[in-house]
Amino acid sequence: MNKTKGHTMSEQTTAHSVSVIGLGPMGQAMVRAFLKAGVEVTVWNRSTDKVDAMVELGAKRAATVAEALDANEVTVVSLTHYAAMYDVLGQALDHLPGKVIANLSSDSPEKAREGAAWVRSHGAEFISGGVMSAGDVIDHPASYIFYSGPKDVFDAHAALLRPLSPQEYLGLDDGLAQIFYQALLITFHPWLIAFDQALATIANAGHSIEQFLPFAQRSSAAYPHFMELAVETVKTGGWGDLASFKMMDAGAQHIIDASTESGVDPVLSKAAQTLWRKAAEATEQTGQPVPIYKLLGGRTA
Ligand SMILES: NC(=O)c1ccc[n+]([C@@H]2O[C@H](COP(=O)([O-])OP(=O)(O)OC[C@H]3O[C@@H](n4cnc5c(N)ncnc54)[C@H](OP(=O)(O)O)[C@@H]3O)[C@@H](O)[C@H]2O)c1
Image (spheres, rainbow, N blue to C red):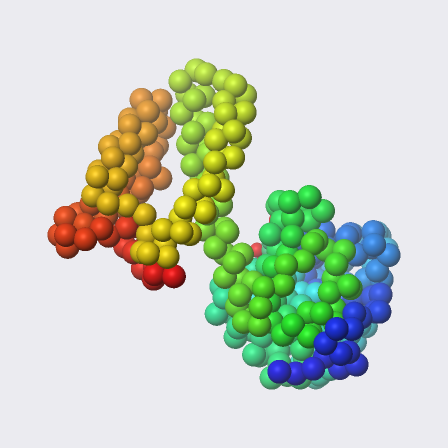
């Protein structure tokens, strides 16, 4: 493992300046957070109008990627995906040696690992981050950032990066921040869509979604309990037996009926029902419980 130049394992950097490459909603939120914390920020973005907006707030303009890399030891990258990192840093490869790239863009874990290896092959240190924010509101109390990669590199620059959001360092695997980030989004995306289905079902039936809201919030208080149960049961293969799968299939039908009666497309509930039925069928065929966790390819923890 490479050592961060000029820092020991436990030392925090005293640097008070950083470069930010990529000024979409997230990059802009990061620039604002750095500036608010008194950190000097140099910015580069492909579209220069976004640079102008950040310069007006007090950031320094880099005319090229090379200038942005040269300006500071640490450059935060916030691009749509890792492919964009190659396009951007590829413009200034000979300015990478001795630098630190913190790529806080989201992508798959394997793309993050490949990106990390590529950056290191050009002489820079690398850490990866997954921004678990409430949209681009990185100063929301629930927002935080997963980091993974070499611990000494993270430790050396944690203080500099702290204005972005609370930090959760996960481990050495460069893909780990993205595994946890994507795992949480695996849950979040269907939840968002399911909540739309619930609201549409209520509104189309002529009832009040405001009246419903506190009950939805109250029910979500039980989710941590179900998460703990899921983690426990996954250790022995996952939740369910034939009677449970049949019960969930029947329950899914009631949900589908409720939405359909309101003229709402129950596509997500139909997908859930398909899985409960597959689990029941596999259980009947094998004579052993085949939980959905196993059907999907999960391993016993
Ligand atoms: N926004 C959020 O709420 C949020 C929350 C959590 C995580 N994230 C993650 O944070 C990252 C950034 O988010 P964002 O919302 O700011 O993304 P975005 O709107 O997609 O913009 C990111 C930046 O990527 C640049 N870009 C894309 N492809 C490029 C290329 N080939 N060459 C050069 N520049 C390129 C864009 O430049 P141009 O301006 O020139 O187009 C833009 O500055 C994403 O990975 C996203 O998944 C976002």
